[in-house]
Image (cartoon, rainbow, N blue to C red; front, side, top):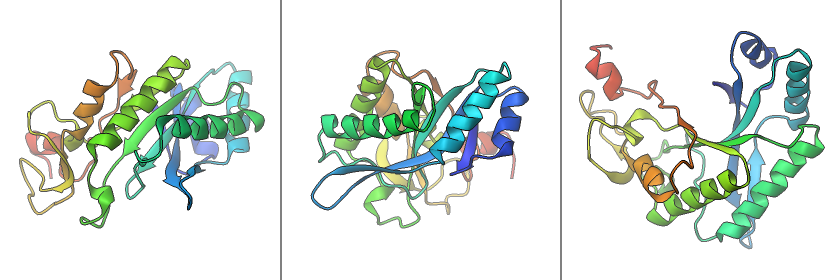
Length: 221
């Protein structure tokens, strides 16, 4: 699997597929709420470019799965005040726009990359219990529709070496560099617990998180 950059759709993505990547995770949409409470799906790559890339790869004998990522650093978390059905309808409508742009069948999967915020006092610097339940339920809905679902947490958001847990995403790093105050404590573990078994097809840990436990354990700098 390989991740594109913010809004990226260019020759580098196609080159990655031609050198072995067969799951392309396009980056990234945001789930926001318009005035009046309507859920909105915005951002992401140019859908016509994505469709053209997928078609060229398939024509070249390189079938690939295409995921869309949700979130990224500083991005909003889906608001649980909006009902599940409304969020699912918004995501389905957006995916249908990808199909109209030429991406056959729409995107194959959904990748969750919900993270924290530069402003440690922002509501986006923590998850809510209801918000995590919403993400788990949306994941289950996506899986039931025949799509793949994946997670991309920074390592501190899903760290098997500790049983510490917090909804905050603005905590000191563990193991080293406690001055880095944007770490989590296993919040993504709640998604694994809340969603039905086998909802998530794979998890890509962000070992490039600033000062992760992995680098500390390996003695890196």
